[in-house]
Image 1 (tube, rainbow, N blue to C red):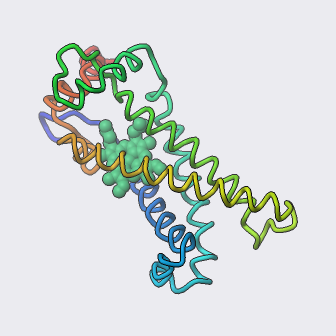
Image 2: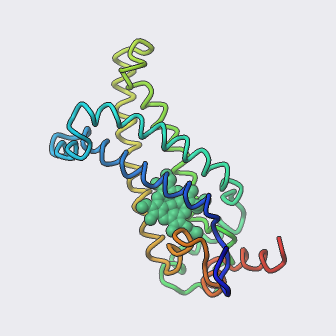
Amino acid sequence: MSQPGTISRYTTAQRINHWITAGCFILLALSGMSLFHPSLFFLTDLFGGGPYTRAIHPWFGVVLLVSFAILFVRFFHHNLWNRDDTAWIGKIDKVISNHEEDVPDVGRYNAGQKLVFWSMTLLILVLFVTGIVIWDQYFFGFTSIEVKRVAIAIHSLAAVAIIAVFIAHVYAGIWIRGTMGGMLHGSVTPGWAFRHHRKWLRDLARGR
Ligand code: HEM
C-alpha cells in the first residue's frame, strides 16, 4: 500500500527480490575482488579466510543468478527499447545539464536505465557461464586447462565491467532525488513521476 498522495512504483515482493539481488552482488564483488589480486586478499577475512571465500563465491553467484532471473522476468518488458529511447540518448547532454525541455517524455524507465538493465543481464550470463567453466570443485573434468584460462580472463573482464555498471546504477539512484525512495518504500511522488517518467505517469492516469 502506498502513502496517500504518492504513486506505487514497486511491490514489497519486487523490492525484496531487488535487495536480495543487490546484497548478493555486493558479496560476490567483495569475495571476487579478494580472489582477483593479492593486494585485495585481505577481503577474504570477511568470509572466514581464503579457502572459505573460494568455496562460497560461486554459491553467491548461483543465488544471484536465480534472484536476477526472477527480477528479469518481472521487469524485462518495461525495458524493451523504443524509438523515444534512441532520441533520449541523442539528447543525453541536455539530460545531464538539466535542460530537459525538448527531451522526449520517458516511460517507466529511461534509456540509461534500460542500458543498465540489459548490460547487467548480459554480464551476469557471461559471468555465470565462465564461472561454471572455472568451478573446479564440480566441473574440472569438463574442459581443458586452455579453455579455463580463457574463461578466467573473460570472467575477470566481465566482473570489472559489471562493477562499473553497478556504480553507475547506484549513482543514478542517488543522483535523481526521490528514486531511492521508490525502491526503499515502494512509492514515489507525483512530482517525481511528472519530472522523470511523464509517459509512465500519463499511462497510469489513463489506467493502463
Ligand atoms: C546497493 C546496490 C543497489 C542500489 C542502491 C540500487 C538502487 C536501485 C533503485 C533506486 C532502483 C529504482 C529505479 C527506478 O525506480 O527508477 C533500482 C532498480 C533496479 N535495480 Fe537496483 N540497486 C542496487 C543494486 C542492484 C543490482 C546489483 C542489480 C542487478 C544485478 C539491480 C537491478 C535493478 C533492476 C533490474 C531494477 C529495475 C529497473 C529496470 O528494470 O531497469 N540493482 N535499483
